[in-house]
Image (tube, rainbow, N blue to C red; front, side, top):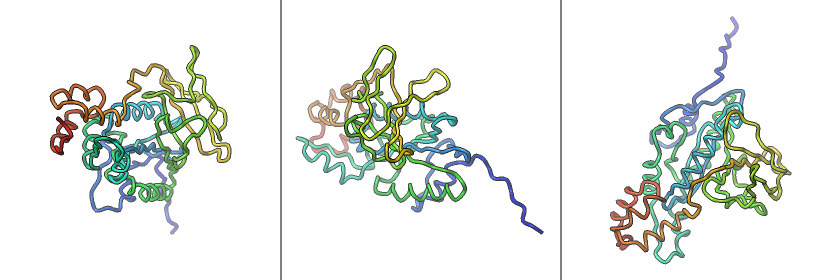
Length: 290
């Protein structure tokens, strides 16, 4: 009697493979919903690496804007975003030259990130519970676990436009880069009344506008000239209301220069989870707040 071949499912929850790739003893539930892998598509995860010392509104605006304009399964098919915080050693080195260096621990930065995301965002956004050092092995295991069941999974790195400069664009993503001008200007964009004029990136093809359904933001893509499958995706923001000067560096300076009685009002318009940040600063003490 011959074996009966069962039909393969065309969609499978991503979390099935995350659990296979997760080798630590801790139990994880990355998403409140279940991002689905599609067998007939390239499934893309956008990952975002940062210090988040502390995290600010621009970080979340960039994440949300890019994902909402990349999740169409018939176009880019981004199924999830994973946020990765640098290890404490990285952050210490980065702030070592500051006059009064504020160093939030890895756990403190994760608390601030977790507290800032909504229930709806948790459907597709995962704050990775281990620092970047534990990411690369997991990434490879997840790709392989998906491939064994016939699913193609790619990882594209989300970068701020300051890392995608026209003359020297960073190519650090595993399969590609995604960026936007939602929170700060991009030097390869010259806005015009009829839409953005995009300057060609060194080492990449000319920008192509992506045809998309509905009334969405304009999206453009270019390819690496030597490795055409490696792409840069740019999600244009027509009407950004973000303060272009928001940065973790500026928030740290505000914390150093502001009396504690005024600090919450100063950081509430720029920092993620400002009340929690203030509590953490008081817990740390040591003259961090006046």
